[in-house]
Length: 133
Image (tube, rainbow, N blue to C red; front, side, top):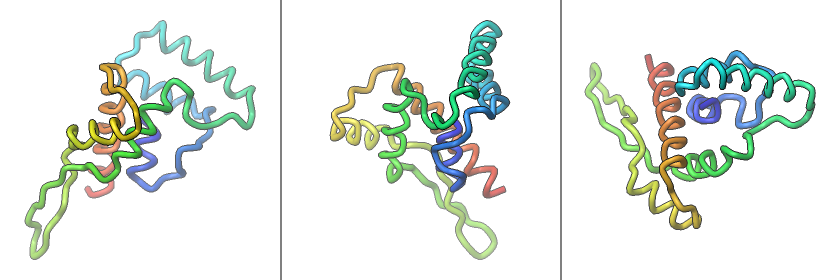
């Protein structure tokens, strides 16, 4: 989720310090992980702090992050009248476009990969909405 927020807010980029365990723990809770899994994540993050110079996207999330970033032009938008102008709001990814990009990349979208991309989509939408509020 942090990768999507970083992308949506022009944040620090995809390579951040994994020692920020509070953000990872909050993301884990938001994704519905239980106390046992969160405790295991805490141990993994403690180990990551001991592994200086190995920050970034965890290997198991690379396909989802790569697909999400490749789909940067596939956002659905709606134009809303505001005062004397127009406000463009992103409403979500165009899943047909996402599927086409995956096909061009040679990536098969299964339920798990699709869910990971949707989690990133929601995080990005939340970041877009916070930025525009």
